[in-house]
Length: 223
Image (cartoon, rainbow, N blue to C red; front, side, top):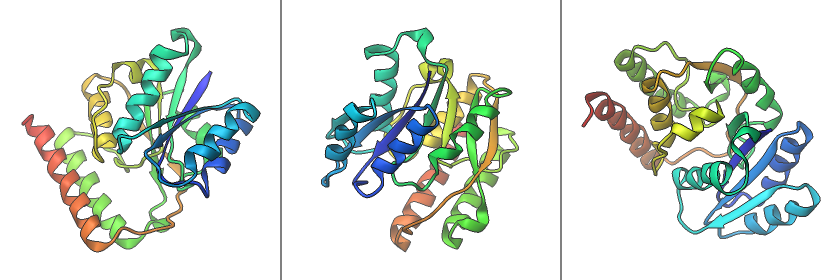
């Protein structure tokens, strides 16, 4: 069985399509409603019977917290250890297309942890600048040659998921990547498409860029 963990915050317009596409390619979706104030949970929970999915609502906001819930559900509450082979992390806003999940799973034939490699021509200029800084710094400090280090479209083997200590906050993608590398797992990129519906405002975007940049350096310095 292959599972998609889908953190979702106020994604009432897209969550049904994300879940439906996962089911069409035989991926079991687990939606973690991340404290939404709209009808995200109502819509996702309504699919649990018709599409045989799972939906959980928690009030603690943050992608890291949502992933903790999803991973715990896979590993402890429902599935037997040998049931699950691959886990995919994908957002609930259709920024990434669930129909491209097979690309990441295919890449897991020769890797343990796969990160989507975005087509930078599809990424707004300000986002490209931030990602350029992150990728260059990450590769320099950690001795890697990755093309994308902060894509939220990720796939991993079950044994990797079970060994991750998932952190809170927006640094969770970088933190999981660093842990995978530190534990000796094979990490690769695979090309995917991306669709940006909204751009962060300048203040929020700058704050995130600097926050992740500082986190990468601090983690490398082990402080």
